[in-house]
Amino acid sequence: MRRVVLKVGSSSLTDARGMIDLAKLAAIATAVRSAKAVGIEIAIVSSGAVAAGAGKLHRARPRTVPEKQVFAAVGQAELMRHWASAFAPVDVAPIHVAQFLLSSDDIHSRKRYVNAKQALEAVFKLGVLPILNENDTVATAELKLGDNDTLSAWVAYLVDADTLMLLTDVDGLYSANPKQDANAVKLSEVRDISQVLHLAGDAGSASGTGGMRTKLKAAQIASDAGIDTIILTGGGAAVQASLSGAAIGTRIFSTRAPARARLAEDSTQIGRQSAKHSWILHQPTRGVIVIDVGAKAALLAGRSLLPSGIVRIEGNFNSGDAVQIRCDDQLLGRGLSSYRTSDLQRIAGKRSVEISAILGAKPFDEAIHRDRLVLI
Image (cartoon, rainbow, N blue to C red; front, side, top):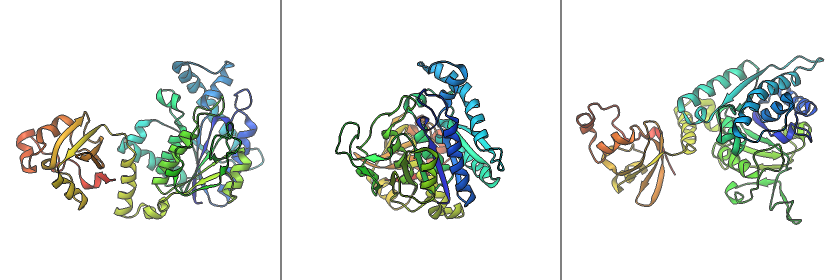
């Protein structure tokens, strides 16, 4: 391992009352410090802001979304204070921490994604430990979905991690729900994540908002980027053992080459395009572009999608949004549209030389450039 993203779930940070457990934070900090001492870079995706807010306000955990947002706003500052203290014990040199609050736009907007990536690389170069969380104060759906698991997978993308480690209240992935099936067996290794996606459950603790379903979703995103995922429990001791090479929990192997090997330290055009294509593959699509067989043949030959090959357009999207590309009933791939729906409808079926006369300008020859397109 060279670079690891450690996602710490609420259940791994809180006590039986659902309040932040400082001893648990200290144990995780000790494990991370040991890993950094041998050259492993760590980024932490930390849950627990709402729990920290509940402790600070001396109130029961909130029930409504606005209450959760307020608790998260209060608790985020408290949580970072606890993390900073955990990484600055009195008897050793402190590890400085940096707070990153991300939203879905920081992932789905290519410009903001690149900006976040550059900021995180600068943090690592300075030897600072990044601690990330969803911006729960302004996020609503994420609070309901427990999306820190998914966020941690995207952070692994952002930092070109080798391993995504999900610290939770379950000691791994089982063949069935161990609480319901006495014959359930823990899977120590998974070589093909597509074979285990059906093994998913809901959140297992009162503090958590995710579950095995969101963890497998995160593992799938990571796998597509060449990143292995480890699901484990046991707090700081388990993290330290795993970072030292112990085979604990469940390791989900990626079917692709490791991110850093594939990107070649992001020094080649091939590496940059590979990273960008992986990002495009997981963007939510806003519409569908249906093409003819001639355009399909051009795409399969590595060319861009021109307006002349478009048969039909569905949905409502803007320039830069991700769309599906279909030929008849077959899904061919995904790409970032060069034009918004209304303009693309006007030039569909037309040659590129006609675009200026139709639209009054020609920003692009292509409806989707080949560098912004991924074939499935």
